[in-house]
Image 1 (cartoon, rainbow over the protein chains, first blue to last red):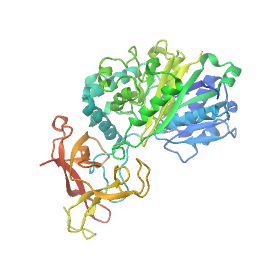
Image 2: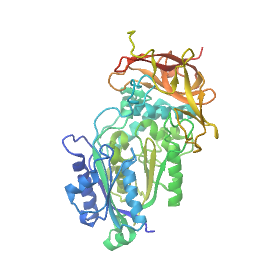
Image 3: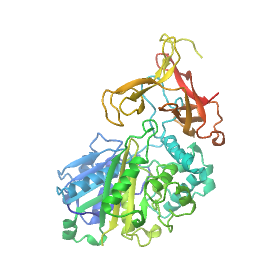
Image 4: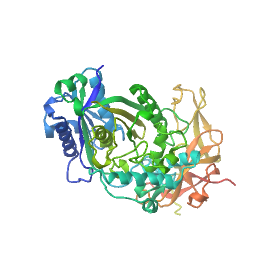
Length: 381
Length: 143
């Protein structure tokens, strides 16, 4: 099986574009990624498109209607917040299988403002606020409180995640926000679902990101190895049975299983990873994933954020892009946007937020329901 | 609260809340005879061990312990806040989610493992489009 490389990748600056169509937003990053590779849509043998909001509306084909109807196979993917990463992985698999040499993966989402989450069944009466909460901030607050009950993690420690990620985003011109949020500001922001304040919730934005994947043979043929990024591992898991998981979604087990499989596939360990983009949909979630991804031992995540180990300049920088908390979280685009971020560092092109000497990085997304996707990427040349 | 009700009496807010005629309300679980996993909601296949047709309906306990919670200060439009969204492990098996009542919405006042009773009350006055009223379950600190 051929090794698979990223030869082009880009994202648009995340924001709110109600006047544009989802396909138009997706087409923009598709063109940017193709330009980054120095290739055209005519070079692509297939398109893998990730989008959630219009999952039944042929978004991938409609992107080709905007940028070139070459007639190639198009696969539309929906997998909650792992949607973009799943589309990317489908492209990766097609090259691994020897079916394709060059494919395009695009993730795109157009979102409204406001709370996400289930409002309960349609029959009878609304259950929200009657039988607890099914909003995403509450669900992830409860997941964080499990860490608090097991390890004594504090509101302040959760809040520090948001301080760090907002700080990182001040160095990322493509993030939705470039604002510092000191600890008091984060902790005193409107409480949404304790312990998540408004600044500890990811930002609903519109956005897209794309990547061009290539077989090794094709990278060499095209002379693109210099800026290429090697995909060392690509793993997708679903949620294994857990005692409480049908009542309390378990974001930990599927992440732990995926991380273990990814490290095995790449033949590396957490110490080999220079930076991580992980799924900080809420500040509470980032703390859980330090341990789930093996970045520290169980129970040490609070200490890790206290010591600044996951800030740029720390032992293992996490969410240098600003993360979902500040860069923004366009659901279907997120899983490719974090691949763009890590690739940009590996290429040494991340500007002010560059992790010096980065050679290997990890991306992680989790879609509630649940799906977890992890990629380990390495500088090729 | 208005008295009129289209049905003969209040309805359960969720299908797994049982209101037996002449008996006390309870939460129904489904237990796998092969592996003893307990589920909320009716099913015929165990998602832990994948055994088919070995599920039996069981009456779950009205006593439990608070596992985790969140204090919800912002919800969907029209939903009164704050409230405590609580996940409770019931004695003898089964985990359920509901509102924790009778406790101030203050993290300092909500200890993990707080023993709770499951209580059954009117569903905060909520009615369906046919005017039916409903019974829901709530958690309150154990007496």
